Amino acid sequence: MPPGSEVNSPAKEEEPPSDNRQLAENDTGPDDIATMLDAFDGLFSNAALELELAQLPARLSQAKDKEAASQIHDLEGAIKLRMSVIAAQVGAGLLSIQSYMDNVAAELAQAKDWALTANRAGRKDLALRALKRVKAMQGELSDMRAAMDANSE
Image 1: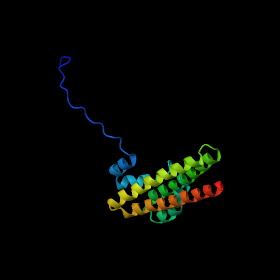
Image 2: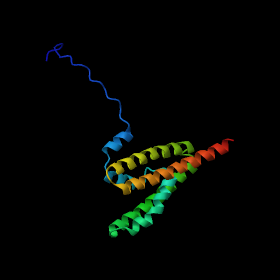
Image 3: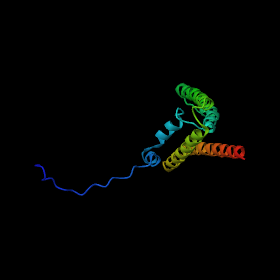
């Protein structure tokens, strides 16, 4: 087209950026949630890590074969390593208590979304696992806030 002969079409309205949690809920299936619940490399909540560690023996007893049992043992190592990394980061001052709490709060919101998505998909087992994680993180945040309030008095 020669310059100036373009057809002026109405400007396309930009959509507001979507919330990642909403995107995750809409695009995440039960299998993805199961994988994310077993991905501990980005998890900050010590309470959630301890919960997952405590649940491993029951999961190990339900393992169907040696490969599944091996994966559960690998998860145990990953959880323990993550707990050590978080403790070292806090101890070295690389991760402030406030940043830790902010990360746990974000993880709590994500776990709620996973629970809802899993429940809608009929995966009550995954929904229950995510809700247990939510409860553990809520308790952790509550305890931390109470300790901070007590120290400020």
